[in-house]
Image (cartoon, rainbow, N blue to C red; front, top):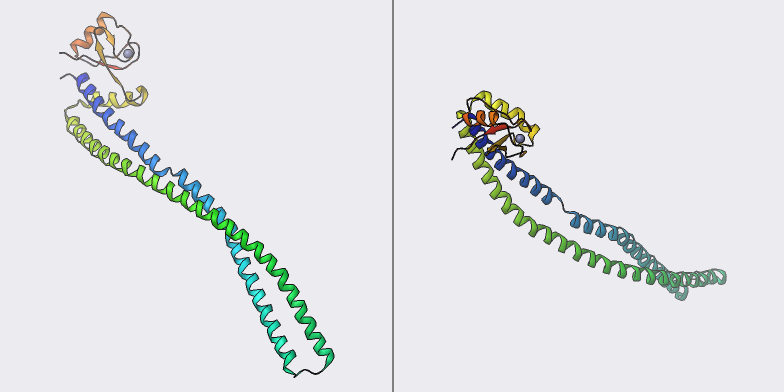
Length: 235
Ligand SMILES: [Zn+2]
């Protein structure tokens, strides 16, 4: 096997490794991309940011109403216990009861309205939770397939890397250096084949003299058009 042929085989192995690496990078990005889950989660958090203060407000109103009710009861009991005889004091107490009852009536209206808002927002919360659950499930299911593909690709990549390691000792050091230098400049394809008299990469027809040098393969010959190493595959 000629140096150029060795390099061509190496290139095929490298392209196989690269192809798997590219898909593995894609899978990694796909698995990290959970926009739908993120959006559903953000929506749920927004609803809860509204719901929590509403629930707190409802509890405060209930407490305030209860406190007032207790106060009304106590004052009422004191008033009818016969312990208070001073008419002015009795009048004050009656006034306090009336004022607390009026206040409670107002608070009950506010509580009712608040409870309706709580109910409405809780229904929104339930719907948002369902959306989040669906999105999370879809993401997990998609990942199951991606994880399977990832496992397979990693195995294949390891196999190709092993093939490469076994090939390397047989490749001429100087030729390998040229290959490695050209590789990034030629989009990972620094080696082309001579097909009839043309370069398989750029399709340009080469001079007979160049084509003959490639066939003889006594030294590394480059395509005069694209600059790639040319390999001649006999048979
Ligand atoms: Zn070329």
